[in-house]
Image (cartoon, rainbow, N blue to C red; front, top):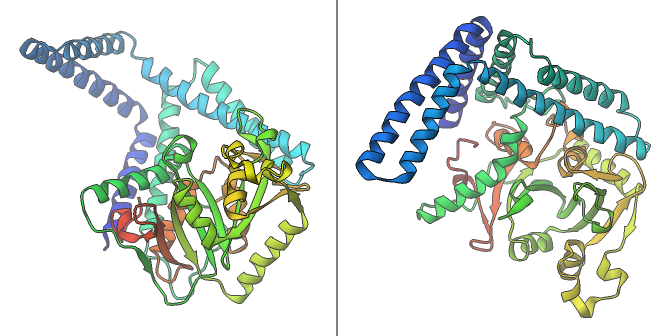
Length: 434
């Protein structure tokens, strides 16, 4: 068994057992965790104070006093962990209600009514559960522990599914129900991958440039980008079909709302041979690329979706185009669409109406746009409503690449380190996803 499948199997067993124990013995586990926390805190206090006596380091004294305060508070108010769990989980659910509620309002504004009922239901459920957790002090700890237990069992099943060989002779994607990683973990995956590559290179370890499972050239490439700072660390996702890249985002700064998380949805297309060097050399991004092999019917499905996009869009001109400022590039360089158009000739388009008329970072974002194409092939990443980041797709594609006979047949990393591409071993192990 490969190390990747061994990891998934081990994680599945641990999470499933822990979840089952939490469901069956919630009170015992809560008391055990509480006593263990007091035990560790007590001995950490002693250790830090001894270190201070020996080394006279004020930081040891500070951490010792903080540890002592933790022990005193926890021993006097043993309901504190329960309160903390309720507040954290309740806050998360209320935030989820806000996210789906904003998407609901945007859909109404754009007259995109096909999912209004579902969004309204999710907003109400998330909001009600969050309100109960935050403002119902009588909520039993047992119920909380059992809910976490059920969640751990579900995540354990997810890892078990990844550990299965899969990819039989007739393997194909089927739209169903996919258990995804928690949003907080998915959001940091692209940057985690990038940091792992950097550490691998610093150690002087070899990094394979490219890996493929077939000599046939895939018609579709999914590209997960990650940059060095800010929101670039969360990543961006685009796709290329037969050499042309399609990228959707919040590119019109004049339409920004809610601190730039909402705005007019803009898509551009550009030859991959021009797009990738620009992203590496100018935008300082690293790109994780996965190639997908399509049959004739799938090509038609992708082309049908692209035709719908073209029929529902109109040409939008960047600031540098509207101002005819090609000889004054420095005035527009800070504006990404202007910068991209100037360097590559990329053409921008906005949507007349429908799902992508308005971009929402936590709803109809670049990942949802990419899912229009992958969904036509049967991929099921977005079939459960939630906050979807590019890292969700990075996890999905990496898992799919490792399956025999999967349509994901190539895996490449484009990085500025050598101006070209690197792949499988840069993920840490050719048999394992992060």
